[in-house]
Structure formats: C-alpha cells, structure tokens
Image (cartoon, rainbow, N blue to C red; front, side, top):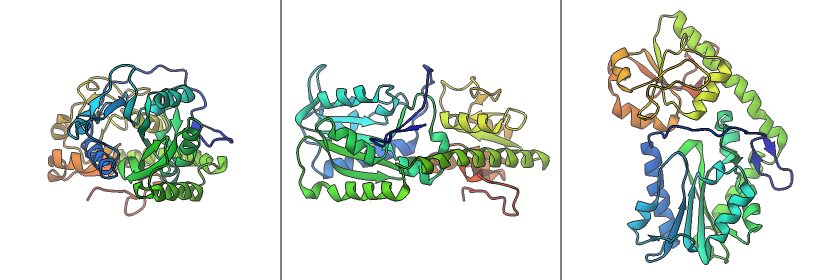
Length: 339
C-alpha cells in the first residue's frame, strides 16, 4: 500500500491484474444498509422528487436506483448532468482516481449532491482488516483524504453518516454550495477527528496492518490444524475476495479446509483462487453436517444463521474467521462464536 504524504490517500502499490470476478450474491445486510442510507439522505433533504440521478455502480452488484425511484428521482439521460450522483463502493475500483473523481464532478449539476459510500480507512486500521486490501480495489479512503480530493474539484463535504457494514462504512455528501448547518457538517468534523485519532495519515500506523496479516493468518492456520487433530470437520462459508487473501497468506488448501460454500451460482463449481479449495453449494452445509462453519464475512452472520438453522441444530457452530487472529489454542478457543 502507498500512502500519499500530501493528500492522505491510501492506494495499492501495484495492481497489474484485470480480474474477472464472478458476480456475488448481494448480502441482506448490504440491501438493508442501502435502504437505511437512502432514508437518511432523504431526511436531510438531499433527495428531491423530480430530480435526475446518475449511479456509478460497483462491480460487486447492488443498486440504489429502485429505492430512489420510489422517492420520485429519475435516471439522467446519457451526457446529462445529474442533480444527484450516487457512488456506492464504486470509485475504489478505478485505477485512475483523479480521473474518476473528475468525471463524477463534471457530471454533477451546479446545485447537485454527490453521495459517496466507502469503507472507512480508520475502521480498516482499528479492526486490523488487512485483507480489505485486495486486487482491483485501488483506493482506501479516509474522510480526511476524500475531503481534500473533493475540494480540488470545487466540492465541499457537507454531511456524513456512519454504518456498521464491513466494520465501519461512511456515506459522505458533497456539493458545490455551502449547506445549512442542519444537514450534518458536525458529522463530517467528527469523522475528521476520528481519522486523526486513528492515525490514518501516519505510515507507521498503516504499517501495523502487516503485523495484523501475520497474526490473522497464523491464527487461522493454527485453529484449522487443531480442528483436524481433534477430528472435527470444518467447512467455510463466503467465497469473498478478502477470504482469498487470508487463505493464501495462511497457506491453506483443501487438506485443512475441504470446501467453501457460497450462495452465488456464478461461483459454485469454481475454486478459491490460488488454492485447490472448491466452492460448493450451501446445500453442502446440510449434507456434510460440519462441526464448525468458518464464516469469512461477518456481515452475513444473522443472514446465514437464519437461512441454515440446521448447522446449530446438528451441534455445529459458526466461527468468525477474523476472530481467530493470534489464536494459539487457549482453553476458550479464542473464538468469536455466533451465539
């Protein structure tokens, strides 16, 4: 990861790949969060019926357009400047960040609002989420960095809302005009203060993610070895790109983790990249009756427990893969189990 000393933007050092990632199933947590975000923006008076909207989508899927249509917004015509521009985890996938932001700013009407949602760099640092860094995710935003980048295009950060998704995400509203204080400028200032507290512009602090990578990978491998030694069966759930980084760093293959289940039909029958671990249908959870299901996406917790009650009914447990960092076989197991 590079950290720009001038603007504070964190980016991948190099990413020569052009990945073709199978479309994942949209988690219920993401759907619920989108509805929450639209509701908050509407309550702040930023979504007016009859105005035009342009959405910059994410390769991972999901769209706010239907939610915005319910509030009377209509899609802008090609080449037409929009009153509302929505970018939900989209801009981070742009290899040229300057060009991506310039394009969004140029597409915004003079009185319009740009709504940017991003995984907070302060949350990544505080949570030790080192495997949030991965191919095709070129940039990692702090509010500090984004506010400066937006100002370079004549846009001011006006309001912000925080969500628990992915351990900490932010929806930032920016426009060319000065907004009334009631729209939430204090929330932006709070995030700027939080960035300073987390040290997201300090290379030494971000360097700690390297230590987190070692702790997370070593803990995962130690736990899987212990499960195998004790004769306990384990299957993974959630064939996400962040799981690939963790499995590769830990040197895990199917001898320790025989399969990873995923709800996306596009992923079933493939394998976790860089490993020989197959991606299988969620029906395998019932067929195999594992003693433990290793969950690679904590945001799926409530959804999968409700969808697959048989896991616990058969005496199995859901185990948070991120909760295994530093695991060394303590009496309690050192696990974040899903009670």
